[in-house]
Structures are given as structure tokens and as C-alpha cells.
Amino acid sequence: MARITSGKRYAQAALELAVERGELESWQVSLRKIAELTGDEKLVALLESPKLPFLVKKGLLEERLGKINPLALNLACLLMSRGRLRLVNNISQEYDRLLDAYHGIEHAEVVTALPLDNEDKKRLSRQLEEIVGCKIVIDAQVDPSVVGGFIAKIGDTLIDGSIRNRLESLRKSLVEAHR
Image (cartoon, rainbow, N blue to C red; front, side):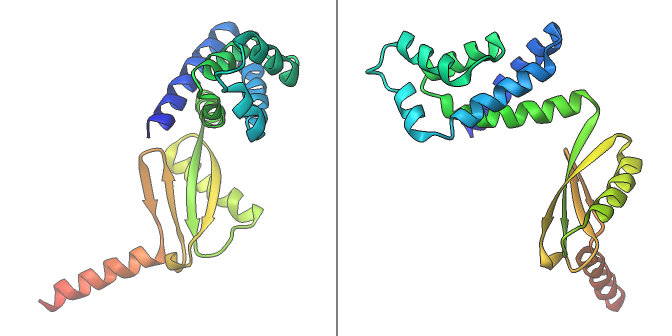
């Protein structure tokens, strides 16, 4: 849990710096590059090794990353020196989410019984945009227990338009009517 919280803090700080300097996309590209680099487990182990001097590790990092935002490189060096370079993937994902929110775009985690095609996603996205009042990007998942309809989670808001929920409501009302 601490890793996720730390990732959010780093991403928030990165976004604040990026907004202040007008480097939103530069930071996004740089964080993604660093995150891709951490996919190489051997390299990460080498970069986090206490046996290798910091300047050698920094040089290796600069060489592998190429031209990126200098402050993003500093963040990578800071994380590397603390043995937390693997955190960059979380930071990059959280930065993307924060950047979308900065641009007025919310992500909806939508669960349906069957996979949604692109047309269904667009239609559902428009419906959710009307409810929430901002642009929505759908992250779709499939769960057959939903039976039909959908369940959408947007931030702290849960919209349950599933058949399963309607059937459960109907069952409760029938039980209470029987009493």
C-alpha cells in the first residue's frame, strides 16, 4: 500500500512541476520511457545495487534513456538512489490519470456481462458524460455475473445499471410485500 501512495505523491509532484513549467507532455513521455526501462529486471537490479557507484549508475541511466526531461531524469536518479526505481511504473500510470483529470477527462471502470464493441463504448461513454458532466474514457471489463446492463465506477461514484441489481431489488420488494 505504501508503494501506491508514494507513487501517487511523486506523480502529483511531477504534475505540479509540469504545469508550472508548461511541460505536461514532456513529463508524460519521459515517465513512460523510464517505466519501459524498468521492465528490464537485470538493469534495475544493477541500478539499485549498492556496490556500483552512483555516478556510474547515473551515467548508465542517462545512456539508456537518451534525451528526456532533465527533472524527470532527476526523479529517476532519486528513486534509483533510494532503491525504488520499480515505483516508476506506478508513477507513470498515476501521472497519466492526473493529466487526464487536469484536462477534464475521467476514467470509468465499466463491468458488463459481454464484451463491448467500439460503438457500444462510445454510446455508453456519451450516457455517462451526461450523468457526470465531463468527458469519460471507458476501461471495460467483463463479468458474466452482471447478467446484463453495466456497473460503472467513476472516481467515488458507483452507477449500478445491471440486471443483477434490478433482480435483487425486485426480490427484496417481493419479500417485503409478502410480509
